[in-house]
Amino acid sequence: MPVIKALEARSHELVDEALGLLDHRLNPPYKQVDRDVLRRRLHQTMSTVTTALTERTPLPVIDYAREVARRCFNAGFLLEEVQTHFNALEETVWKFMVKEVDAAHLPENLAMVASVIGTIKDELGRSYVELAAHHRAPAINTHKLFDGTQSVPRHPMSAKAAH
Image (cartoon, rainbow, N blue to C red; front, side, top):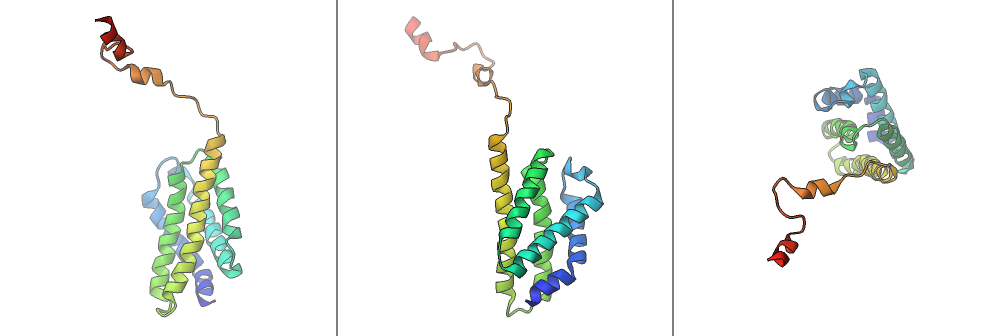
């Protein structure tokens, strides 16, 4: 399919553009990740997207999203930080397609790419939720939260009973 070949041919440019977007969008600690590492990750994402498009199956991106979720969750990155990576690449791909793809085939091609990248982001979110559900986080002591700062009886109904 011509759009897949075009994405593969321009993948380095698209990755560089996405990397430029990330320079302005990343938050710590993700900002501390080496630029070459980010570039490699963006290339891997792009390669996985084009593989899924070529093979006409979402399986490569589903597996990839699960792997990314596991790696990033265990490294302490927030979901929204990782999503920023995919959003930047998606934005550059869309801009490229609007400029370069034949208008007669644009809706179909945008739908294909959106479906594949959407699958990555959806599976990433699902995987993060699953990992968080199995992660043992310290419990929050809500008794102190509800005690408040005023001298109100612990059980307001008991004050009425005392009168």
